[in-house]
Length: 261
Image (cartoon, rainbow, N blue to C red):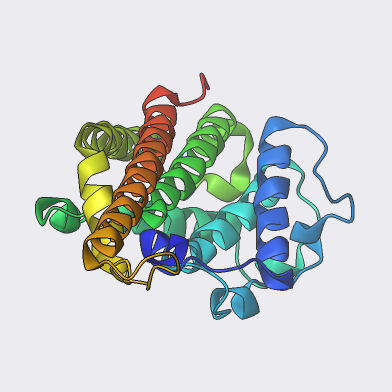
């Protein structure tokens, strides 16, 4: 049942862990803190190519791999300036160009509410997609802020006007706001009844079973009715719990704020 509600969410493996350590190190570098893995993946892993094609990733996770790879390498080059294998022959200005050019591609798709319009409840992958995008937007917002503040002291960014970086930061904030509006809409559309209906249609009906103490069809009918009623009560409680959890998850996104810098 959870698979149906989550639309086939995947189980993590080694590539998923590598990917998330990459993200964690990007965040740690931006925040000047210590990453979970102190072997410094960003400077040692050539690229995340093998991660992108791993079937364990959800569609959103896989789609964001090139975004995180570019942002991770650019972050290290901007802030710590070490020898980075993943940078190859790319300069910071080239990476920045990629970031600014590809950012608009993350805009919400028109019709992303199609399932909701058809009466289907928001499922776990909808929520996961929003959280993943929020994480990237917030990291990128910090990165662009640091690039703007050090623009005059960073020769490798001289080919990119400071104004373009400021426009990119504003675009990042605009996308964040759009997805937050979407999260607010999703929360308002969570329906325990829709979840109940989805689960009920997926389950087989309660089977009639012979009563060992009586041959009366009336008695058997009463027992079957009680079993069906008990199943409905259990499903109703389950649907109510899922709806509450979904509302809390969407509310968490509504409360997320962009960093101050």
